Length: 512
Image (cartoon, rainbow, N blue to C red):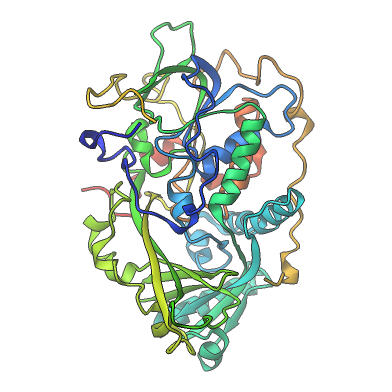
């Protein structure tokens, strides 16, 4: 099944999409449907089969002696959205945004965010090695390189101040202008920072998690977009009615892992999670050229308020994304856009000669742009992800939902070396109270029926060092409504709330 062009604008994913490198070797579950027909009902319905949705399903079923009945609905193919279109970068926030976090939320919260993101590298390394997952996980260091002196010095002052109070991890290193170009290899570098990071083949990792979830009973339905989520007519039913072009599913709990497309089916997130289009590429050696020069680090190259990022791959190719200098000023090319089938025209040729322009020793490398693709991210009005129980609206007791109608145009069916600082301890095993036997599949308080809609979305193009542990905490809340957000250990500012939905803060300038 494909979406009709008549309804492809926001909020629905575009029926066709540009080809990302990460999806050149498709998994057998890519276009999978576990059953020919949609199940009539389920305990937990997850909207979206990207990193957030698949990881949530995995955690719900992990070490659970009485697992819930889970259905995962995906508008296109499994892992075909932002996760399969990113730069493969697992790059935690350890210093750059810390001054902003300290100013807005206080020192404790800023450190909480930094430690949470940084922990993902060790947690993912432990999980991937334990399960022998072939996803090219590579430990490295990331170089944050500044090409304009003013921004470099501003960051250095903030870094020094935060370091005085021991708020910066000890494995972050600053290199001044005198040595920055030689250390980073980036032409014209005015300063650089380096810190532990990792990179990965994201599609392969997510498809492993999906395979495990399906082996434990989850039901996947690809090419099945969700049109609306509403309360059933029968007030005693206490289930959600989830409408798709292939029929209706009733669900006790619903998880919105729909990232940039969330506001279309959860209207309380309008202007709070906005679809924003980005661009990425793969650079390789030319057919006539020899091997490309060696890069050992991943990079973020910052200039005049914009940035580019890249990771080197073991096959010698480079994944490069960003290109904001070419298009960020033209909002109509990226803001509130859901079409990832077309290029961002001002940036279409941006990556040609990128390595030759920016890196010493690459001038005669013969590096060429092999592929360019776009992807839709979910950016939030306050630059923080939304995770947790979707808040109720006091006047109605339930969040508002769109009407339960099927558009007539919808078709019903169709077919490295490891730095020592990276020895982060793995996440502790799930606590016994969350793996206890509960009936029927999780502990839901009948007296509190609104706590049945959840969200993990709006990752601002920065989901790789956030989602795995965030969805573990979310799964704990879904399984037992006595588990509070505070019990999960997630950064408290990630919690979706009525206050955030009502806030006038608008980092993206979304409001007229």
